[in-house]
Length: 301
Image (cartoon, rainbow, N blue to C red; front, side, top):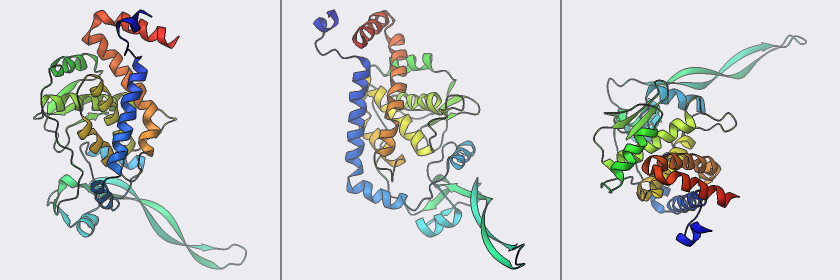
């Protein structure tokens, strides 16, 4: 067809996105097999894996939380102490208790153990001080690619919620689902801001209360894996290389799950990246959108 005569390397968008996400999976797998990541996993294994309800509780009270543990766990397992005056994050913790049960037939009384729940408190690593934790290097993205400014403006136009800059603590940004806005750290590079905005827009598209898939419940680890994978895919499409940053970020959040979590989420990642890229293309080059959609449609037929 005409499109192939103009550009023999032309490929439909879905195929290009699949190639990028396949590269992502390969890059994460390579990092998982490195010695540096093995050391990181040893540390992460000491942190409790919280339920979906508790991760939502943590996120609602401290959106920028990254690693949480109890007061005692920080002191005994990680040689760190909670700073004086820090406010704990409430979670629901299981607790065992004993009750006496009387057998109606024999009249005998026995003591049995049952499981209940109580309010407990955890603290984020940012609320503690002491020995450094092992980490996988996630350097801040730097530089100002030529198309960064155009991409930022296009993202602002298609973003369905307000965007603001503020002091977000240790986090580069976050999506506030309760108040429906995205916050970006106010002192990061232009490239980092673009990547972070895409990441948080992915959270809004995939994990906001109204957009969550009831047939695809995800915990906080999976949410971060999906959002950063979307960000990596979209950035790659527009020539912004975030490989070093994204691979370390995703591997950290999916620690202990090898690449299974990433693979299970790949279709959702691809669909979300496809939607963002389609909307961005319309903003970046409105004149080409008709030809672009016709080409993809012709290929799919």
